[in-house]
Image 1 (cartoon, helix red, strand yellow):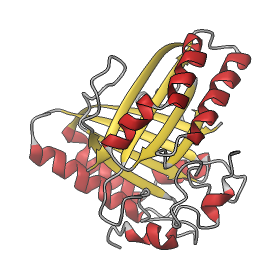
Image 2 (cartoon, rainbow over the protein chains, first blue to last red; image 1 turned 90 degrees about the vertical axis):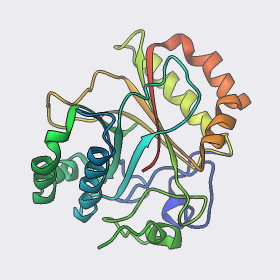
Image 3 (tube, helix red, strand yellow; image 1 turned 45 degrees about the horizontal axis):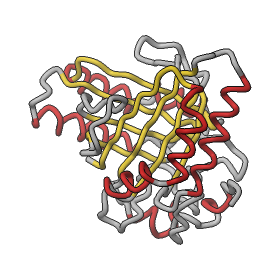
Image 4 (spheres, chains in turn cyan, blue; image 1 turned 120 degrees about the vertical axis):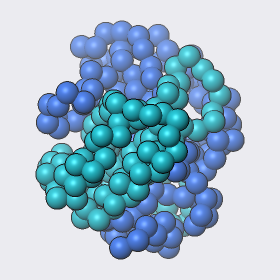
Length: 133
Length: 133
């Protein structure tokens, strides 16, 4: 089956289309998505308190209007393989309509508050921004 | 607004809910998602041909039934920041219902064919598997 992003927009995901469903393209059938992948390594990797505080901080980012989708994760117990990096503590995956919306998010008061409140928790953060190929 | 994953399942994404929408939780309102983030660095970073071949190979993975969502990306022109790694060539983001479905994908003939056909193209691959926090 060919790639049909419109399946999602016409309710495909809600209907459980499954395979072949593309990520959301909120700007329209042919609009690209900006996917913002972020991985955090805590200063205190063993601290459940710090992890939960970071997760709570990330959840507050759902209030930023330009954030179309948000997934907050922790390392999954998938197979150990050389290519798999499960050393991070918390992951954040956001979908935006555009590079411009991602910039609006960076400058949004809720994001600035998140950085102010939580930046002391992490030792390292790695970001990958990807636009639909 | 509180986090309501059900908004998406009841058609929220199709209706353009935007902020507060969670990633798909195909297994049900309370089911976690397994997000499989993959970043590829080509052996020949400047080769558009190799990049397009890799992207075509990834697109063929839409035929794997357990793949709920797939986003194929390239580095976005977001702001240059120390934490942003835009040195990769192609990104792949997949959403599965579970760790088990991700294992089915790893062993699926279409995935094995992809590795066989495309592994010569990349110099490095990094995978982050994240389960809903």
